[in-house]
Amino acid sequence: MKITIASGKGGTGKSTVAANLACTLALSREVALVDCDVEEPNLHLFFPAAAVDVPVTTPVPEIDLARCTFCGECGKFCRFGALSVLKDRVLVFPELCHSCGGCSLVCPQGAIEEVPRTVGRVACSCPLPSLTLISGVLNEGEVQAPAVIRAAKLLAEGHPLTLYDASPGIACPVIETLEGSDVCVLVTESTPFGLHDLRLAAEVAEGVGIPAGVVINRSDGQDEATLDFCRERGLPILMTIPFSREIAAVQNRGGLICRDLPGWEGRFAGLFDAIVKIAGVSP
Ligand code: SF4
Ligand code: SF4
Image (cartoon, rainbow, N blue to C red; front, side):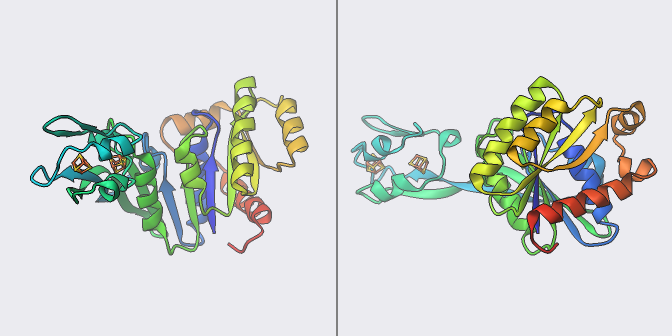
């Protein structure tokens, strides 16, 4: 079973929910937790442990100038502006390349070879006996977040229960993370901004055709607008985490409330039961 934890915006507590859920589940079963927020992965802060790094590469073109006739076909084809053909050379901008492979197909001289370029890494660790943490890390300045997310998800393949912590927002990396998931948990907070972004995130989950439910975080008890929206859209409320100094104190020191505060392990176990119910698949 694959569960994506997502949110329409940053700072809602998405990673906190993912970490607490994974930690609770790892008490009774094997769990893989995948940090797909590859631009700012932070789950390792909850689970410090020695990690093994696997580089992530993507293919980029390399021009064989001995064969190239500077015909310009590759430059015309590349819609990402990653190739510029001049009179006597071809400029390649690897950081703009999306590795579609098209330029090597259109080159009439067979002058383009694809060579690997490192865009990030995947760090694997086992911080708890039944928990595998797989963190995607995109190199600074790179745009190929989906490639790193795919690599991280691939390393988790075969685990019976996998949690994906998505990037905040609704852009390509979130779609890449949702791909293949059985269910999506949308983490929100009851503010006008939170509701606006929940609306967008719910549309994405619906568009991808994945059942979703909502966790309200830092609730001040005035959740009517969020509850009304969820009722209208048929989104079940899976859990409500109140705003409390005690919870904030645990989180501020990088702790997990399922470990440090009484009753929360049971509540996260209940969250999993609610997720299984909406997913409609066996865990
Ligand atoms: S398509 Fe091939 S031959 Fe034409 S400019 Fe590009 S690399 Fe050179
Ligand atoms: S592989 Fe695709 S994106 Fe990259 S340079 Fe070639 S045509 Fe452009």
